[in-house]
Every structure is written in C-alpha cells, then in structure tokens.
Length: 402
Ligand SMILES: C[S@@+](CC[C@H](N)C(=O)[O-])C[C@H]1O[C@@H](n2cnc3c(N)ncnc32)[C@H](O)[C@@H]1O
Image (spheres, rainbow, N blue to C red):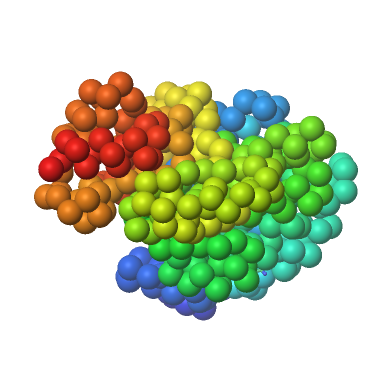
C-alpha cells in the first residue's frame, strides 16, 4: 500500500514489542535499500541483544534513562529500548535523512510514545557535540551507522554520562579483519592482518579504537560486551571519567604478535611494547621468524560474564525476536570471556602442522589431558580457544596429531 503521507509503499510489521511501518522494499531483498528509509529485518537479533543489555546493566538508575539513537533509520532500535525496557524515560531519535524522520514520527505515534521521544533531523556529530557538556549528556548513546562508526566516536564518547554506555555497530568488517589494511590504518589507526582469527582481530580493533578515543579525553572505557554476527561487529562500553579509569583502560590495549609461519601468537600491552628494545623479542620462539604486529587493539575481555548470565536469565522475560540465538551467543561469550585473545581453527592447525584435520572434540581431549581449559568460540564453528601457551599448544598438537 502506498502511504498517503509518505508517498511510497509501506508495510506494517511487529518486531519484538514494537509495531512499525517500514518501506515495503525493505522486506523484499537480502540487502535492504538505503532509501527512502533503511530498515533491515536481519538486524532484529542485534536489537534483541541491545534490549537485553539495557534491561540488565546495573550501573545506571533503574528508570528514567535518557537514550540517544543517533542514526535511527525507522527508529526501531530506540523504540525497542524504550518500549521493551521499562528503564528508558526519554529517547532522542535522530537521523539526517528527512524521510527517516517522517517515518520515526509516524512510528512514535503508532506506539503511543510521542511524548517520550524527541525527534531530530541533524547530522549525528553536531547533535552529539551539543550534548557534550555536563547535564546534557545521555545515559546511553547508540551509534548504528552504514559502515564504520569511527567518524562518530569522538563526539559520542563525550556525550555519555559517567557510568553510561556507548554502544556501536561496525559493518566495515573487511578493513579491520585484514582484507583492506590501508583502510583500517586510515580509519582506525591500527595494523590489521589476515589471520585465521581475523573476525576477532576486527572486533578487537574496533573496541580498541573506541577505548583509545576515550583515553584522549582521560576517559576510561570498559568493554562489557562485544561480539560478531553475520556482517557486523557490535560493542557496549562503559564510559567513566578520570585518570585512574583511563590508566586501567590503557592496560587493556596492546598488540597481538603473530607468526605467519607457524601460527604462534601472544598478546602484549602497549606499555610492554615500549620496552621492546631487544630485537630477539620480536622473533618467534618456535621457528625464529619475525613476528607480525597486529594492532593497537583491545587485549582485555570481550564480555563481562556476570552481565551475560543476567542477560541469559532475562531472555525468558522479554519479547525479543530470537530467544535461541540470544541464549546461544551469550552462553558462548561467557565461556570465551576468560580465555586469552585469539583463537585457532582446526583447518589452520592441519595446514601448518601438515596433518589430517582433527575434530574439535579430539583437540579438546588433548587440551583437557594437558590440564588446560578449552572453549569453542562464537567467531567460527571450526575455532577454539585455550589458556595453554601458544608455543606449548603447537608443540603438543604436533606430537599428538602425527
Ligand atoms: C544503518 S542505518 C540505521 C539503522 C537503525 N539504527 C536500525 O536499527 O534500523 C544508518 C542510518 O544513519 C543515517 N545517517 C547517515 N549519516 C548520518 C549522519 N551523518 N547523521 C545522522 N544520521 C545519519 C542514515 O540515514 C540511516 O538511516
């Protein structure tokens, strides 16, 4: 049906607890059109996780939260936060596209929340900059752009209150995952490299970049939840002012040193890298090759286990669209959270050690037998993590898989 006011075909849908009008074309192809207004039904699961996060995060007041959906499209994300979580008191829903703003206004009315929503038709950076001063800041700022969020992060971190949340999506996964290293250097100031754990490199470069931007303003950023799904990375970071907090964040930023010859790797913090004046430290301890530096990136935790557990408990009390996905993802993040950065894949192990591809179960048995921890990873169905030192793991697998 062509909408009489909007002038293009629309359909009415329900996503989670929200009723919406969206362009009819959005539901017809796997890549929804950017015009007249962008709506991607495939991202409903990402919005589900956002709803669970807001319902569960404990370091903000239980109600009256002030949320900014800075690149809102149809408005769906912010409306879901407002309607499905009783914690949001006021929503600023902004988009630079005039057609989007018309749709947001209709969708606010359909859901009966117009009195709780301020609709803006501005460039996100200019809007966020106007909210940088004390008293103007938001409890939660959500940055959900086409492509890279990098260009919005400076204004976004400044627009978040103490203990508030900066959430960001990145769909430019190829640059940070090593496919376009020059683009990654340009946008994120980080060296990316194609490795078997490239999804994790991309996510850690994104999180590390946001943390480094915070550091320039003496803000500490603590990563609470970061993951990859389909074509995007997503993270939720707590912002806290103060040199002490910023110093803690600094310890979570570093490099991964990686041997392309034998897949040895180790993480090293930025502070420790400054003491790398002995050339032997950049040689692979296993094969003597020169190690490649990947980063700077986030070397701290990718998820806060107790938060993920609370989110899992909340799943049954919400109207989210895909309970099974949310539980599976969050359970995996709990298991992965205490493991060091990077994962291995059974294919790469087989190729480098010149053995038949082992099953994941076989690798698990070997690691268990050596007395170390093993976990699968949400990044890759053929991937696994362990707290066993990389050189020990490679040596053990070489021996046991022959
Ligand atoms: C990926 S879409 C947002 C999707 C939406 N958050 C959702 O969950 O459906 C990105 C949106 O950013 C808007 N946009 C692009 N550049 C912008 C800018 N500089 N300031 C504000 N909005 C912008 C686009 O019009 C588009 O609606």
